[in-house]
Length: 335
Image: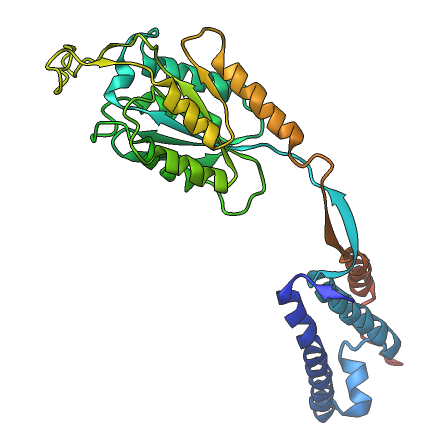
C-alpha cells in the first residue's frame, strides 16, 4: 500500500489536475483572442508561434515533469526496511551541591572546587553525550538544558559557588526533581543523573525523588565530596559558623550512607572523591558500559522512501522541455 509522508505534497498532487485544466483553457482562450486580431491566415506569418509538434512535445515534458515533481515532494512510501539503530551517546544531567558546607576544606582545595575539577575532567573525556547542569542548595537552579556543547557547561561551572543560590541548606530531593525535568519524555538514550554532594542534610524527599528517577529509568551516580572526619564550615567573612544546636563551631562531614542509598534506589553507583584516583574516569568507564549495552543488536522497521523514482525522471523531463526549440516566426514567400 502506498503512503505519502509529506501532506503538503499530497495537496499539490490533488491540485495538479485543476492546474492542468486551467492551462488548457488558458491556451484555448489565447488562441481565440489571437485569431480575432490576425485571422487564421495572417497570424502564423506575423506572430512567434511554435510548430504544433514541438509545442506538444514541450508541453508534455513540462507538465509531466511538474506532476512527477509534485509526486516526489509528497514522498511516496511503500514496503518496509529493517535498519539497525546506532548509538550516539547518553543524556547526562549533573546536579552540583552548592551549599555552604561544600566550602569545607577536608579535601583539597575544598569540596566545591574539587567537585568542579572532577566534573570538568568528566566533560573533557565526553564523547557524543548531551549534558545538562543544575545547581542545588536550599532550592535548585537549572543552569543549562541538555546540550552537546560541553564547553559551555564547563564555563558555567565558574559561576557555581555558595552565593549562587541564596537559600542555603541542602535539599537534594528538590534538586533531583528539577534535574529529572531536563530529560526528554521519549527515551531515545540511556539517562544518567550525576549527583555531586557531601550528602549532609539532604532533606527528607531525596529517597522519594530517587525512586521517581528509577521509575523513569534514570540511573543516579553519586560522587561524595568530603571525608568522614569532616571540617569546619566557614561563613562569608572566613570565620567558622556556629552550630545553632551545640553553640560550637559547625562541623560538616561526608554522609556516604545517604548518597549510597540514593544511588542504590536508582540502580546507580557511588564513588568518593576522597579515596584518591580519578573519580571522573570511573564515571566515564561506567557510562561507557551503558553505551555498549544500549541498543546492542537492536533494530527498527521503517517505511521505504521512493521519491527518487519520481524526482530523477522529473528533472530529466523539465530539462528536456526547456531544451525544445521555442517560438520561431515562419518566413513568408517573397518576404
